Amino acid sequence: MKVDAKQYFSKELLAWYQLVKRDLPWRKNRDPYRVWVSEIMLQQTRVDTVIPYYERFMAKFPTVRHLAEAPEEEVLKSWEGLGYYSRARNLQAGAREVVERYGGIVPDDKEAVASLKGVGPYTSGAIMSIAFNRPEPAVDGNVMRVLSRYFCLEDDIAKPSTRTGIEKLAVSLIPEGEAGDFNQALMELGALVCTPKSPVCLTCPVMEHCAGRLAGKETELPVKTKAKPPREELRAAVIVEGSGAHAGKVLVRRRPDKGLLAQMWEIPHLLVPEHGDDAALAEQLSRTLHEETGLLIRPKLALMDAEHVFSHIHWKMKIYAADLGAGSEDGAGSAESAECTSRLRGGEEMHPLWAAEAAAAYESGFGAPANAAGARTAEGGAETLPEPYSWIGRDDMERLTFPNLFIRVLNHYFDNR
Ligand code: SF4
View (cartoon, helix red, strand yellow):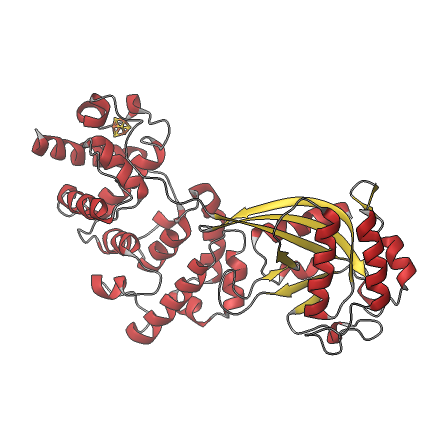
C-alpha cells in the first residue's frame, strides 16, 4: 500500500500543481540567485508580505554581484520591515562568497551551495531542486506537516532525527526529472490546502490515500513539542523631543556593530525590572541615559506601550515622551524641569516622589556624566552628542534603517504630534 500511496501522492500532487500554481515573481525563471533571495525572504514571512519586498529588492540588486557590492546599510534598508535582519546580512555575505569563489555565478554544486553563509539544508535543497532540478529534498515546517499527515507519521517533528527521516522520505517521492516542480508542489499544498490549523481535505488532490485523514488525525498531526517561549524583557523607552535647532526632531541612536539588530537605529531604551510605576521608570530612564549621554532627559508623558517578539526574546516596552533639561539643549532651569515632569499620560499627575526627585536631580544635574564628554554644552548641537546618538526628523527615516517596532512607534509619534 505504501508504494502505491507514494506513487499516487507524487503523481496527483504534480498534476494538481500544474493546474493551480500561483504566479509568483520568483517563479518567472529558474535563476538560482532569484530562488535564493525568495527562499531567504520567505523564511518566517508570508508570501503576500514578501512579494513587494522581493520585487523592490530584485530591482535594486538584480544580480549576485549587485548585492555583493552594495553597502550593507542599503541592503538593510531594503529589508526594513521584513524583520530577522540577520537573514539580509547573511544573504549579502553569501553573495560576496559567490563573487569571490565562483565569479558571481551560483554553482550547480550541492556542497558549495550548502556552505554559503545563511544557507541551511532547506534553502540548499530549494535552490538545488528549483534552480538546477537536482533531486534534493527541501523540507521545512510546511513540508513536514504535509508528509506527517499524508503518511500518518507520529514522530515529533521538533526532533532532528524526525527531520532526517522526512528528508529521506521526501527524496524518495521526487519523480524523475521533476524535482523543482515537485518540491514547489509540496510547498504549495502546505501553503494553500494542508494548512496548519484547518486543512481543506475536501479540496486536496491526495485526499483519497491520506493516512492521517483516514485515521481522523489531520488536525492532530504533526506532533511537535512546544519550543521554549521567548524570554520576556521589560523595557522603558523615550522619544526625546528636540527644541531650538532641533525642533521637530527626535533623539535616536545606532545599535552596536554586533548582536541583536546590529547597526540598526532605535529610540533610547533600557531594560527595567518591572513596569508598574511610571515615576520610577521615568527616573531610571533619566538617570541611565544621563550616565550614557550626559543629557538631562525629562520624561513628561506615558505615550504608548509596544512590543516585539524575536525568536528568543519578547520585548515589552513602555514609551514616554521626554524633553531635555538644563545644560542639555534649551537651557531651561530646574524649576521648569520639575514643572515639565509633573504630568503623565492624559494629564495625570506624576508620582509626587518622582516630581520631587526630578527637581532635585535636575538641580544637581545628576553629577558628572560617565560617558558623554561635551554632551552638555549649551544648545546641544548634533556634534555634541555622544557617538551613537543623533537628532532625526521624519524625513531621515527614509535613509536610516529601523526595526519594525521603532518604525511603528516613530510613525505614531510623528502622526500624532
Ligand atoms: S487530505 Fe487533508 S490532511 Fe491529508 S494531505 Fe490533504 S489536506 Fe492534508
